[in-house]
Image (cartoon, rainbow, N blue to C red; front, side):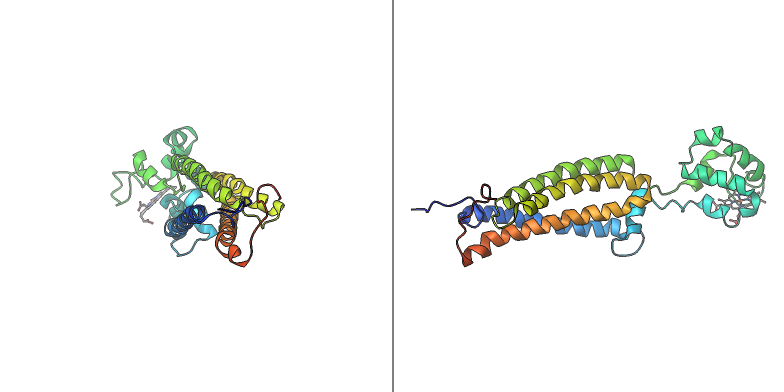
Length: 254
Ligand code: HEC
């Protein structure tokens, strides 16, 4: 006859432990795959292997120094307009280079006075014709990182998916009997708090590159609590019972 036992990981039967362990193994592999994927997408954003703060800035905020128009205005086209006018063009580029702002905020006049005298179809020079807005726009495109649309898509998938993973990892871990209550509650709650911080920090980084650090800290905190709950659960299921019986109740005698 089976002995009556307390509610803890160590005293569960082999089938429940096998179920829990199978799940934990698969989500751990999933976690590793996610890290590989991060390296291969975001990790290469700055052109170098390995995830850095620059990668996160480029992925979410974009590399906004990179429009041709801006580079030329601080390079060979620098003498063509006053500091003030060049600054106005650069600001317009950073704000998205819309046609409405081109027409409405005096940028068009700057181009007409300073650039179009050369940059027109009849100049005979092999240079783009700026009487056609399309030709300006093409040179004003800056990399503004992930679109709001893709952020919204990835955010909701992450929120639902990761909340689900941590529900089960946390449920299994809540049956561990050897962890002091404050530590246990902290480990269970941390991934949820930092999931929200992580997703918020993507949106904040899109607006301001200084938030890239928050992405890294939140990701690190989630990974640490995952690793902690995973290791403790596996230890209490497979290693601890070989050493001694566990008669504590994980849910009641905390
Ligand atoms: C005196 C004639 C002249 C004026 C005025 C002039 N440009 Fe140019 N621009 C050129 C020439 C010539 C080139 C090609 C050589 C080069 O890239 O430096 C060029 C090239 C460029 C390019 C790179 C074109 C490409 O797509 O390869 C950009 C961008 C540009 N100019 C922007 C401007 C802007 C903005 C202004 C106004 C503030 C301006 N230019 C005023 C003569 C002019």
